[in-house]
Amino acid sequence: ETGVTQSPTHLIKTRGQQVTLRCSSQSGHNTVSWYQQALGQGPQFIFQYYREEENGRGNFPPRFSGLQFPNYSSELNVNALELDDSALYLCASSTQGSSYEQYFGPGTRLTVT
Amino acid sequence: AQRVTQPEKLLSVFKGAPVELKCNYSYSGSPELFWYVQYSRQRLQLLLRHISRESIKGFTADLNKGETSFHLKKPFAQEEDSAMYYCALGAAGNKLTFGGGTRVLVKP
Image (spheres, rainbow over the protein chains, first blue to last red):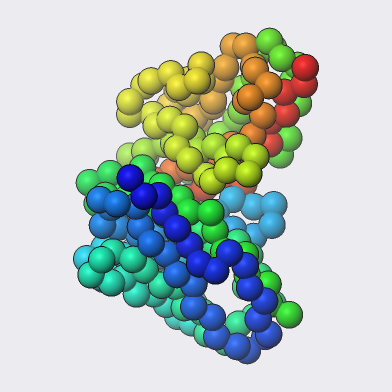
């Protein structure tokens, strides 16, 4: 069984730039959720994808967008990066029937300068 | 809107002592509550969920709807319990809302 993988592990971007983060879900999982974790805080729900469509969204602006592909992998795109976007971005996969039992990836550390 | 509060940022206990991590929530619907744990250099993982009423690694948690709490307890802490613990609330069929986390340090 292959666990959730994320790429890259870390990256540095400049304010105003765009970034794409990638996630491969665990084998057998068809649902992917994305979270932002600022330093010293708990993960904050960005959105979830199921059957290649957004299936719920947290309190994040439209410049945070995503995709899910037929193989259930997913991308998180952030446009017009701001300094406050610096955080650990976590991807989690699950089966739709147990969408709260989520399996997390190691995260991507994004630094915006 | 849902909210999860973990009032303690850090809990330091000696090995063999009881440990209790507090979690309070606010949610207008019927909640599903979870505890997630992150050990050093490992990824976040599910520890237990209230609906299964199970004991995992000696930990138990009881949902108290009257007090809107879901505290995590273990009667005898072990050094391997040192980790970051997050209480989480499931809502709307898909959204997990996490608390700010409690770091547990078990001293020998």
